[in-house]
Length: 347
Image 1 (cartoon, helix red, strand yellow):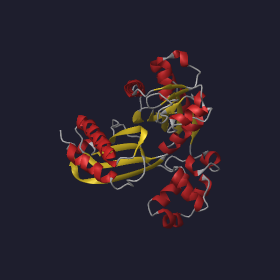
Image 2 (image 1 turned 90 degrees about the vertical axis):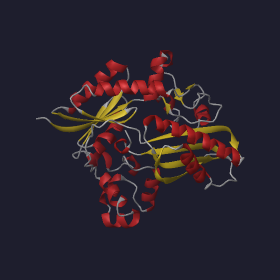
Image 3 (image 1 turned 45 degrees about the vertical axis):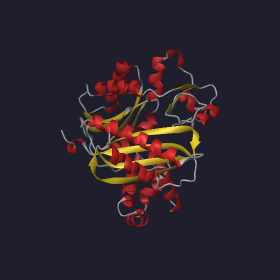
């Protein structure tokens, strides 16, 4: 009998795979995509092929570190329009199925389906995506979104894995807490200080104690994650960006704060142009500063009212960057504008 299932479709090494399609001679070689594709410059890895990952190369790693770990890697610049076009083709393919499709980003989406054989349905999805795009994907199968998302990691690459209430404890109990979708390294460290190292230990923890230690909302929520509980539904509304951001990595550290402010103004103007194209005003502005050698901090503030005014967004960004230590050399700057939801935007 058919019943509801959630499938999480995740493109394998998406950006690297798209680049290999463009350059078939790179198949089987370690490929690293990031920055302008020059590992002698400052920049970070956007993605690495599986062959490069075997050398310890991973996302957000400095390109120079990646080059040291994998000197034979092919380094390529980021080509966002190419990836956007490939992603659109994948999502169009997913929408051809009798399923609710919730897009999470370029390379992943949830499918809400009703079937008596979710593995067979997942296999059809994989074949359809490959036939349409020549890209491989992995599919996680779950009885909710949380379990489907986590299941994908067990199916990679090009595979399928089912994670449900029935096998949740057997699969997850002994895994570290940051194996959960929603718990990162910082939270895992906080939990470790409390004596909680595994998913099973978090699932057994007292909810009131967690609330007192981690907050009345987050503490119990982490416990629910550890039990695989997720009541959210797959939503078929079109995916829209929540924010736009611009960053600049400097080949030489900035030590003149006047130059820092100039760069922040430039990035703020670019971001304002990005959100103006969508006609969605900014409600919040954030500034990221990475000090040398690799120490990153972020500050943000909510605007008095949503705006597309360049001077207002620039002013907010300047105010934020001036909250940082002016005496430290700056390696990277970023400005992000968080937009109001589309339904709140003027027509």
